[in-house]
Length: 411
Image (cartoon, helix red, strand yellow):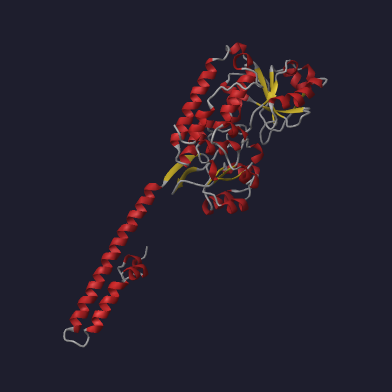
């Protein structure tokens, strides 16, 4: 701030406007008395009074500006998350975009879903689960209008307050460089995010977060820690109840988790449960074992695109096969298409899981806290139907209204 703005060199434009009446009045008084005796003294006194008023006003404004600056400083806050480090916010973000459905779901769970402007991969953001939660929704038309927010031009156009993206993902998947990331962070808004759905990418050489660790960071961004804590308590109770009903470890199935998006699968991209990414959370919570344990088969990643055919899979012969890429199908539609094809396949039909009808949808690649409740409920039925009911049943294992109340801040 220069000296003119403090009044040390005279009236600023704002001071002059505010105190124009005083200055003008003094001038009129000087003009009316200029022909009378003592006019010089009167004029000097008026000017002294005017200068004193201006100085007082300038001092008052300086104090007010200082107090405003201090209030703004008090309102600012920081969130620390790898790989960005410490990110400072001057105010709570209102508009946001997320790369994947997991981070978008976190924002919805915190009650700020109406701030979404777009998603980096809308094809894998499953919003239909919100239909089961009273009063919870997201602007699907807005998401469909911006379903693949991945270019700098789109970031500028949307002009968000925060980007829930791992910036290194943009560098490694979409040909950005660090200068691009810095440009958007400086000119538009910061990035806060970490790729957590899997842990097999070589470029991700920094800390990973669990689903709820990442969720807590997003809650700090939106200053909704109370909703995070309520959600975490609900989640912990739900998981504890499910786990208390599981059979002994030696009676639990081993599973093969894979991706194959066609209705007539011929090859299968493997996922390892020991990867600990958030996309496997429900399976790890349910205590199942990885059918690939003891093999040298690696998890699908940016660099590993290996696939197994039916002959390879028959050597493993898992108890359960979980196939991703079919989340737009119901359980019945999946059985009538994918499972039916495998049953008729000359080699696939020999698999134990196929013969026992234990081939299921494998869940979302990216899941947030709301998604996870629904996916864990479904997985419990898939793995242990004797205890939790068939996967095609309407049995509910968690309270939908309680979830909606947390999202809506009614707790």
